Structure formats: C-alpha cells, structure tokens
Amino acid sequence: MPKRKRAASEGCRPQRSPCSDCKAASPPLTTANLERLQHSLGLSVAAAAAMPAASSSRSMSPNRNSTTHDVIEKLEKYNILIDAPAALPDELQRFVDDVVLKPRDPSNPLSPNARKIVQRRRISERRNEATGIRHIVPFLLFSGESDFDEGVEPVPYITWQAEIQLNSFFLPPCPDKTTKNTWGLLTQPKPDSCVGYVLRSHAAVADCKAPFSAAEEATLNNYILTKFMYLPFLTGQWKSPIGSENILTARCQAARDGATIVNYLATLYRVAYGNEPSPVDTCHFSVVGDVITGQIWMHYQHGGTYYMHKICAFAYDEQASLERARGYLHNIKDHALGARLQSIKAALPAFEPKTRNLYPAVAMSESGGPAPSLHESSASTFPVPLTPASVVSEPTKKRRRKDN
Image (cartoon, rainbow, N blue to C red; front, top):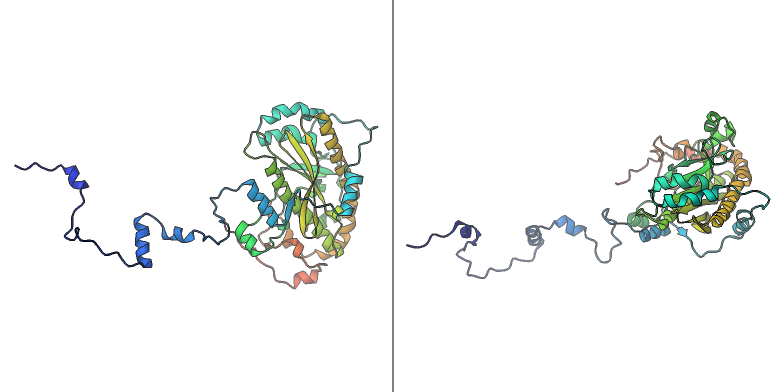
C-alpha cells in the first residue's frame, strides 16, 4: 500500500504543467511586459519613473536629510555669502574701524555683565537651547526700559524679544527658476533674539519714551518687518553644546536673518531717495554662540550680494574676551541710538508719500508671516523711485500657494 503524502509537501510542491518540460519562449521586450515584471517584483512603475537620470539636477526629495554644507550652498545660490574673503567697501571699513571697534573709554566703569556670563556659563552648557538663552543673553545683549528685565541696566528707546518672525517678503529674491526648483525657497527668517526700537504703544504701558513720533510710526506701519518692534539693529542665534546643532548652524540662520533685514533697510532708502543707499545705513549686526564660543558679525549688501563679515570672536569662559566683545556691542547700540536713528528719521518724509498704497504688499498677517496677497518676488524689485501711480496702475498679484 503506497504511503500517504504529507499535506505540507503538497502545498509546497510546484505543480507541473503539460508544457513544463518545454522551454518557454521569452516574452517580447515591450513596455507592457516590463511593467508586468516590475509589478511582479513589487516595484512601483511610478517610483521608478521618478528616479532622476544621471544628468539631472540634485534630488529635492523631502526625505533627504539636509546638512550644514547643503544649507551653506543654498545660501550661496541666493547670493548670501558667509565669511567670504572679500574686502569691505571703503566706507564700511572706515565705519568698522572708527565706530564699531572703537576702544572703550577707560574712565567709564565696566558693568558686571561679563563676570555674570562667566559665572553662568558652566550651568548653561548643560541646559537645552531655550534655557541656556535665558541664562546668558540678557547679560550679553541689551534690554529696553519696557522689557523690565531684572539684573541688567535698561536702555532707552529699544526693546528685545525672543523668536519673532520677520516678514518673509524681504528675504533676498530667488535669482532664477532653476535655483527655486533645485533648492526651494529660503526658510522663514526667525532670530532667537532680536533688538530694535520700541513701539509707542509698548513704551506707553511701561511709562517710558519711544524713539518715533506718531506720524513716523504711521509710515513704518505701512512697511512692516515685524509687528513687535521697528527696524532691528542686532539679532542673535544660539545653540546648546548638548544639542544636535552647532555654531555653524547658527551662522547660517543668522546669515538668512541678516540678509532679510539688510534688504528691508536697503529698500526703504532706495524708495525714499531713488538711488543706492550707503552700506553703513543698511548694515546689520548679529551675534551667534553655543555658550562655549561666540562671534559678532556684520551683514551688508554690495553689488547684489549679501555678505556676512566677522567682527570678532570671544570665549564665554574668559571675562576679558567678553568685556572686549561687549564693548563692540555697546558701540553698535550707541550708533543705533545716534546716527542710524537720525538717518532713518531723515528718510521717512521722502519715503512716506511713495508708499501710501503699499500696505497690502508688505503688511504682516496676524500669524506673523507675510500677508496672503504677497507675491514671491522681493521688495527690492519695486520701481525706484516708487510712486503711488505706479502701484495703482498695476493689478494686484495674488500670492501663489507653496507646495508643502
């Protein structure tokens, strides 16, 4: 009696067809047959078609992890250069030598802030970014009278705030369609710390003075970079030593923020006077740091390129190094409250009649981002000089939705 075959072997044994001993002819090489083969192998035809050819541009897959090198290269495509070996324009070099790097008056006593930073440095190194900022930044930068920060000397006419969004309308323009398709748009400018001129409404509730008159604020309110202060002159980007980002990341973010502010200022002067402004009037300053080392940078525009020039470096554990850096920051603050403020005030009467109809184009939305009616070009593309008639004669462009 023949043995009964196991059920398991029956299920695993391939069934023989009458033609199994005959060699089957290969199917013709057609697109349909290739699709059937790909399907049988578990491949998606659409995914295979989406793979870039060897000669195509770099992939912009959303799953691709961006590195700091990628970010630097993207900034360079937008003509934003960090620490380029370019000499400063003569006017700007004189400004740096005579104003920014001016030695402190030895007759003026030093504040205890540098010593306080050294004392807080060790614990700040072990905290996350937000906590480290709270320990260090009030003693490194400046606080206004309306900010009510205890332990630091308040400065009139200014204010500082954390993590405010700048109007994306003033980001440097994308140079061409290829750059946009390959690299995408620049990210939202958002400094960790921002120091600028206080609003009259904020100064009033704090019972202190504001730098601009009601009429001057009315003009600036039609040309908004941020709703929380006017014309920032000093920003900061900070990283924690225990975090996943480092000071190079902070430099890239500061370069984006600084270029945005420079473009905003340059457009204001360009529209007001109808010519290219002085780089001294439009330059901006930033501080980057990781609680171990820090750097002060100057941002400026020259020949269509946005530069980031290092003023100095300092160490958070060296009091003398911090005192020197804070001396430079005091010079920057004094310039912002003196010559810079007067230059802006002088430009506003010429700027105001040319911008009465621009409110929809540069106003901020309640969320802090650009208004929905904004188009993707930069404010620097406005005609110079810009007149109300030239604005009214052009139809309003709707902002195209960006793909997520």
